[in-house]
Image (cartoon, rainbow, N blue to C red; front, side, top):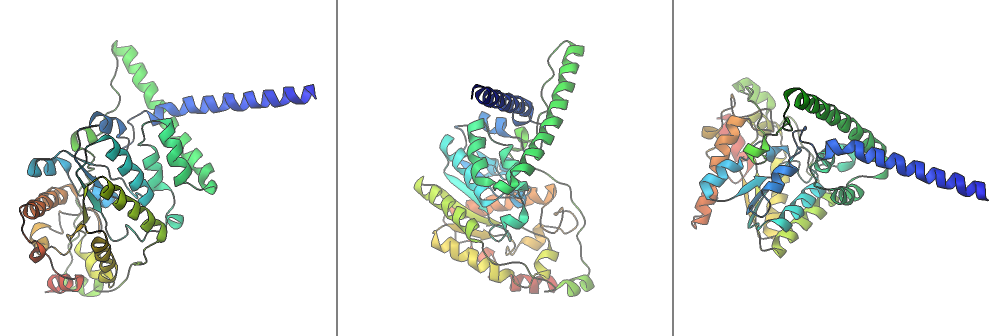
Length: 351
């Protein structure tokens, strides 16, 4: 019996030792700024100052510039979007920032796949980014237990170890530079200190000839089935905002003409989004239906790919978004600024 107790004690101590080593090994990653999404220090520095949030996936992070909204609307905003962001990830980040900031307005990006993505098929990439953006161990544990399935634990662990290894190597490089130069080298800064969460990408020429447009027209379709788990956390976000007296503005960010022309069932999808806006009595603006889209966004320069804006496009769109919100704030009816359907947009593009 005594031998069994000793073996058990030694095993527990070994497990504890391994856990402590792993935690220490992961510190450089979770407290670093080596990856594009690691903006927790930026958001900490702004805690208590923000009154507006933009939240969504890469559609939003690459199209909405808070610096422009701040200047045009006289607000203090931050774009907390990140690539492939799940609806649970959005809810978690939104709740966190609402708790520590006097938020008055939230822009929620609700583009074509926001509510239709299947988390089981998509994988955990988006939630990995959120995990790397959190402030402390308790937050990470809370998010971890709800965001990932048991079957994903092994892969999450391996991915985190890999990212920790890279962060540790960069920390070591900085340490040696500090010793060599006789002064402490600053950690690698990320662009969010300047961009307030916005992430720029270059432009690519997505121009289409008349023949290409004809071939693309209604050639494919997208999944328009809203998934229940997405709807659950969307509902939670809406109630969170309502309970805190926050103005919610749903936005659909611009996509390239090829995306609009090729998909034959976009109206079937976005009609459901409009119903959700009516259900929660919130504003909804689909900027693919914007009558000025063709004169504002050039297919040669305004987009990175079919579904993401370039930095040039984001500059123009952010100003247009601010313009529409200004008009609404002044009591104007902006419905005349938009087409009623994607079919109308397609007819215009094809002319």
